Image (tube, rainbow, N blue to C red):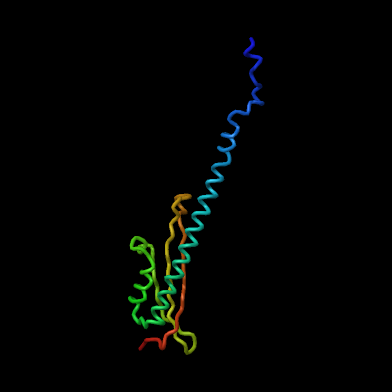
Length: 139
């Protein structure tokens, strides 16, 4: 009978409270941690797409890359070979009044490392740069 009097009441027993609190807080903490990680990766890839578009515009303006292939090679040099299938480069000629421009669009399909759902696992990153050209080639 002596053992029964030394037992604590159920609601005053604190053993395991820290484990229970961790089990409640941990999913939220890890979701925030992985979310910050993924947003950081997204911002880094946006910066890379912008730098790649700028490299294409620089190739057209400074180095006189008249053909689209040279501009695309300057852009693709900013990416690894395994990322090139997710990369789309569009180069168009435009005119605003008497001034001719080349518009360079870099579109990259960014995929999250952590797939949140089957329907939503990435975003599309777009960067655009324009560079002036001496004249628009045409007929």
